Image (cartoon, rainbow, N blue to C red; front, top):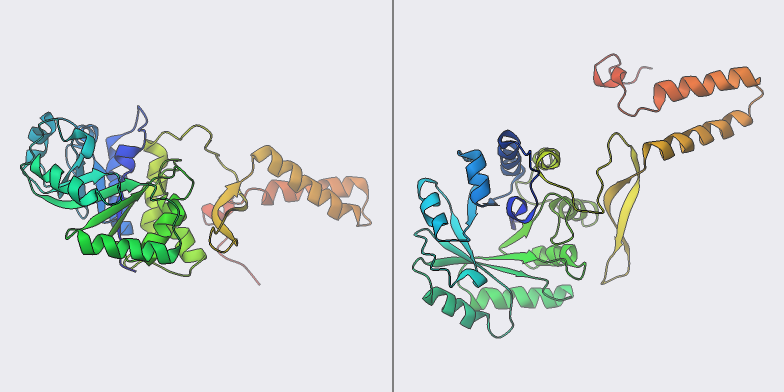
Length: 319
């Protein structure tokens, strides 16, 4: 499938106060290698990086007239202007992407009014909305109507106000949408790129054209160094996979696996020890020997990424 992907994390997410420019640079490079076509940036990102990585397109979010002077020395694809900022006397001289909510029966008039307020040409539109709940058939008709009435590329940015952003992003993909915007860090406001890719592959057996999972993994790793986690989404360290988080397909009622879930280290130790104790209770070993075996197995096997594996002491399985 050929849907274009845009990352909005650097503007929509909250950066850590000590986020390093090198990590932001590598984050953008990882997105490019994954197959993400555009990344959205703003003034704070330009001030940190100074030099932008190559191999990916840039959408610059303009919020004041001063931004116009800043972007003149950079090669950018779009200047993004929100509909609410049309009266700020912003006059960029690069192609404009207009971000606006989707208003049925009025979006063409809104687009015409916005063009009358700008000097530069609007060459792309981003609809940032929850779009309501639609079946796949309704979404296909919706996307076809947008294509027939707006003669420029349209980027859809699903908002998660009703917990349907992922569902919406998937149906937009199956409906042939030009472009969809995501975040890499977990957020309650927008669809997450990892969940989207994993659901496409794990549930629908679909892989996007020219998309590389290793690049996505790299972006996810660097995102931990530059973004502040939303409240209620604590970051677990050194814990194994426990189960798979699930959601429900609103069309069919089927359970849909999403992301790996984790268990705290203390709970893992208790469950592991309990399992060993149950196993040893069925053997005819004396108590001292059983305790020694439990300790030995616990010491050598409980770490799923042990030093012996990571540093090459054991290379594969032996017969």
